[in-house]
Length: 424
Image 1 (cartoon, rainbow, N blue to C red):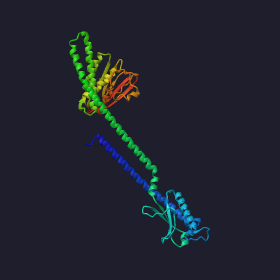
Image 2: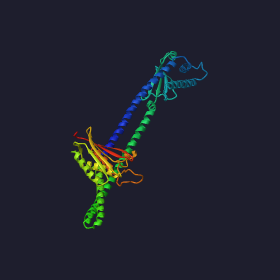
Image 3: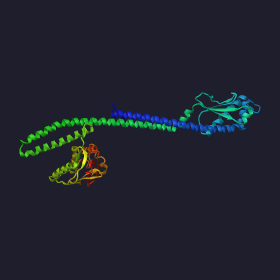
Image 4: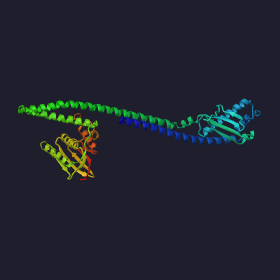
């Protein structure tokens, strides 16, 4: 079975092979263009050489004497004349090639149509099939002097190496960038799977730990319930405190277990189409009842009509409860408002408070796992930094959005946006 990891590796390998193929194709195109450019340059050089050698000048005069082995008009021996002609012609060809933009080793031979070789370059002139040669039929002075057709053939031993040298500015950076991409992708994949392994190990540890904690918490709750019946009235408050804190700890353990199961993919939400209006109204009425027994000013406003959404009711109710509880905890004299209305096919639920507010630099972090906004160096309210992480995760699983508006010292507003399945 093809796992996600193997799929990523497969896609990565295919991508690298694809990049190499593309790089190779670009190289072939570049070589083709380099050859066309070289042909244009060599044609220009051949034209210049033929033009120069067709006239009577010091070069053609020296070549003519060397070919005819005539030293009557020079004061040097025949061998010296041939050597001088050889180097003289070599330097001249090199100059014309450089003028045309060709800088690569070459060889040459000067011969006639009847296959008589008159002059060779210092470098051996190779005529193998893989060597490129460019013949130039000399006109003017030399053919007339010898009464023969004279050919000057210029050869290049390894033009592919020359072409690759011309493309070095594209090949080397291309390969370097490709290697950089491969390195970065491998590093990212390794980091991703390492982080995933750490998360899996952490979740398994938390899962096991919370399961182990549930047994003593249950025992404490049961023992406090039994103990409450037999203790004197002046001690019942202490027993009630034990029971209350035991229930609170149980809720935290259940929340951690719920998050761990959702992150591991073991817990899948069961979505169904519901009218969330009655459920939201019930939550508001329950919180309003709580507010009467505490110093909380709570007001809610629900737009009339059904709120048909596709949701997992239990977790969505927990989200609303979480946000209301946060508004209560983070305000000294809480003034909390909940508003719900529909607009453009979406259900919008806003919960605002008059609490301490959230700094701009913290707003992007508050939904991170275990992150908690600090008041100085001390957390004002106890908790584990899981509440808003849970809220965002549930809203995302409902394909909804959550946004925050906050200002330090003036309070915070959370806005939930959920897609309606029916417009009322």
